[in-house]
Image 1 (cartoon, protein in one colour):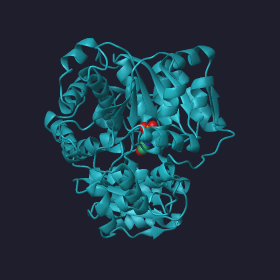
Image 2 (cartoon, protein in one colour; image 1 turned 30 degrees about the horizontal axis):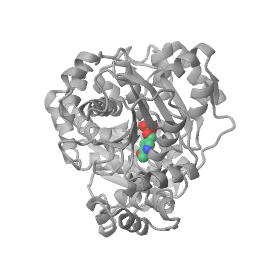
Image 3 (cartoon, helix red, strand yellow; image 1 turned 90 degrees about the vertical axis):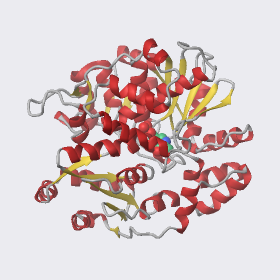
Image 4 (spheres, protein in one colour; image 1 turned 90 degrees about the horizontal axis):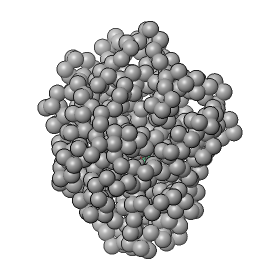
Amino acid sequence: MKFIETRGNDGQHPESVSFSQAILSPISSFGGIYSPESLPDLGTDFLNNHVNSNYKDLARGVLEAFEIDIDPATVDKALALYDEFDDPTNPVPVVKVFNDLYVSELYHGPTRAFKDMALQPFGVVLSSIAQQRNENYLILAATSGDTGPAALETFKNKANVRVACMYPVGGTSDVQRLQMVTEDASNLKVIGVKGDFDDTQNALKRLLASESFNKKLKEKNISLSAANSVNFGRIIFQTIYHIHSYLELVRQKAISMGEKVYLNVPSGNFGNALGGYYAMKMGLPVEKILIASNNNNVLTHLIKTGAYDLRTMSVVATTSPAMDILKSSNIERILFDLFGNVRTKELMQQLDTEKHYQLSEDELKIIQTIFSADYCGDDEGKAYIKNTFAKGYLMDPHTATCFKTYDTCREKNLKTIVYSTAEWTKFSPVIANALTGEIDAHDIDALKSIAAKANIQIPVMINELFNKEVTQKSIIGKEAIEEEILSFL
Ligand SMILES: *Cc1c(COP(=O)(O)O)cnc(C)c1O
């Protein structure tokens, strides 16, 4: 399968690239991103063939259908990481919560958030390609909480790859910070930046674009890469669990094969939802994809009105911080797939220069046959956490936003798959507050309180964080980042 650019080709870049090329250099002509030229058919035959497949066999089937240029031994090694999830026979449990609401739990990996679903296998794939090509890569990451730990975890001790990960000091939860600063592998560097997430992300963008920085890396024989959520190497692994969750409903006899379902996704950069969109386009029987946001509700407006408008919006901090995003990068791949590269370039350039675009009425109609959207405020989210806990299910604030779209966006009584993107342990102060009204300054107090109330254990990998040695001690101003990274290399 070939990958082509969402904003067309400028004659400087190759007209199409392989999967491995697309994931090594994800930036292309006119600032576009690589997307599949066409999608395989994974309709009825594929689903019937895989109705009894375990997760890894299904994954192998999907990757084969994409005809990626990764050798089978590497694919096996990558997929073997799902054996490290809580239940190796079922890394993604799908749990019945209400009669027609099922939760697909994507957080049973090492860092307890759904970023592991894609970053775990992606780390193996990227490191293998780098070794085969005898190249060295520096992965730069800026994180507000979940991507950083998952990227560090997957690349630790991997050959030919180093990671420099920046986080805003005071801008993450205790658990998220400890997951990063206790990593001690010699190929990892974690840098606390005095400032907010935007400062960190802007520093990262400046470094990626800096000629002098790139030149110094070249002298050291190192190329830059990014493990951010537009990298197709992550997206491909995010189509698999949508298909798995559907087949799981068939196996649980909740639906019969071919029956349509709603996919209900808490969305930020739209990687998770894009995986669902591709699964639907490849033949998964999906009625619609419900897009849940928090008060950063730019996607709700887009899907309801066709307007993507950042002129009057700025990011607001919410209790679901992994969704505090206004520039939702993977929307571009939807525009490209539905409306082609000429229109995508026009819309995205308008967004870059004028901070807004407006879809035509016809385009909006097409979007609305696929997506429906709503947003959930912090207090509403807490109420969903509390009420759902009273009915026997504990969930995190990101997952809770989906319960709003479940209530407001469904037009038919079809089974609905809600994607749970984080374990309760990652956002415990919000959950403890929702359940008891308490206000905890430290995660450990909230964790203990929830564990007692719900009569569950704090998972070992979370508990032991509080006793681990802090090995990553850099805390610097944003002007010192470049020097800090160069001295690490
Ligand atoms: C990253 C993340 C999201 C948003 O996922 P996207 O693929 O960026 O839309 C939602 N919830 C949690 C907990 C996350 O870490």
